[in-house]
Amino acid sequence: MYDLFVIGAGPGGYTAALLAAKKGLNVGIAEGSSLGGTCTNTGCIPTKTYIESVNLYSRIKSGSRFGIEAEKPILKLASLNKRKTRIVSRLAKGIEHLLSSAGVDIFPVAAEFSGPGRVTVGDQSLSTRDIIIASGSRPKVPALFDLPGVWTSDTLFDVTDLPGSLAIIGGGVIGMEMAHIFSTLGTKVTVIEAMERILPFEEAQVSDFLKKTCRSIKIYTSSRVTALQGAGPYRIAADTPGGGEEIVSEKILLCIGREPVIPDGVEQSAVRLNSSGGIQTDHFMQTSLNGVYALGDVTGEYMYAYVASKEAEIAVDHITGGSRRISYTNIPSIIFTSLEIASVGKSLDELDQSDNTHGMFPVSALGRARTMEANDGFAHVVCSADGTIKRVTIVAPHATELIGTASLAIDQGITAEDFLRLYHPHPTLSELLKEAAEDVLGISVHKP
Image 1 (cartoon, rainbow, N blue to C red):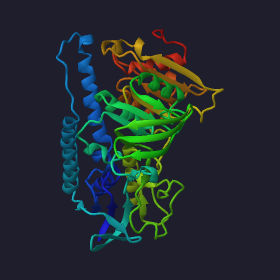
Image 2 (image 1 turned 45 degrees about the vertical axis):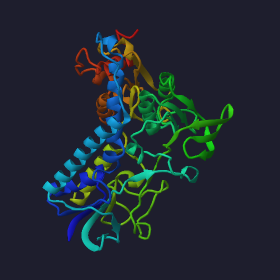
Image 3 (image 1 turned 60 degrees about the vertical axis):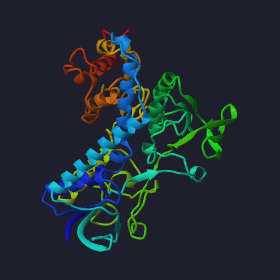
Image 4 (image 1 turned 180 degrees about the vertical axis):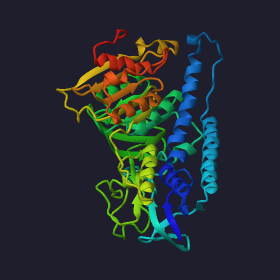
């Protein structure tokens, strides 16, 4: 008999198990794949491992700009793969150690939901007071692309031979990060995006800026694949604004989104699903059944590892008698492309443009950026009529590290004037936000 049983050991699932164990609950967790879920095994960690390597590779190649003379560097996909495997394996073992040390029982198989208070793990039927479903997601694969050899983010990191050409279907976050990796490695990359611009959920100026900096990548927007032939190389027929196009590519990578993985037994129960096909939850992450919770990608809503971890906090708090509610108002979006991109707050479409004030500051005018030979990018701060910070967008080196401060500012309802009470050390990239906030008030002395 468990106090809590968790189905899925990704960032949400294992975080929930650890938090519950720390609060004295008897916890079990089941995972049919590797511990750590998509993030650790085929998502965040492998991607950023590759990106760190290709970014260092690019910097070494431009070493002469830093006064460094170096022989021509060599970066091989097989070497990247080996490094990724080492890092992923170490993190997965670390998660296992944390769970075991906390007294959590680990079941290395997929669990089936058998109703409130019951889960089936292999040939065992287990009793539990509460259940958390955190079974994650998988790549969407329409029938047109359900062919041998077509890569998804789940299979990409098993590849060790660099293709000469790669067609990426989807110009969202995953697609553009992969485009950055493979184009830097020397692959001829083509991106085909159905929406009118790449990164369609970011600001238009961000999409336009990235498109201009991706000079080696061929990008088709407002375009759809209509037919696919071959088995590598592939012949791709696409409808584009310029008419029909045929694109020949050695490999294809499909990046058109992810869909929830619903455990066996859920759809046969009274657990309600939402319009996205995920499990519907309330502010406490509880489903339509008392004692049954869901979090992370399986809800089909905010598919970020850090959101799943926050949802785990809320669910365990409620299970142990608390009343905290989940808030999604200050979720940062982060993208690791040739320039890092990060944003937080309401979108420009959601804000009343007539009452907003804007502040902008270019990376090129920042002293720290100059020492890094970084000239591209900007920070954009949007405030309401009373000066409260409502949205921040950063396109710059280490933008993903800087956005946390902006997230806190938005969550706490801080004004640009209050934000400027902080000391922003010089010379640092954090001054980018200071200068943009000063520009909102018309007092930036460094803006060109």
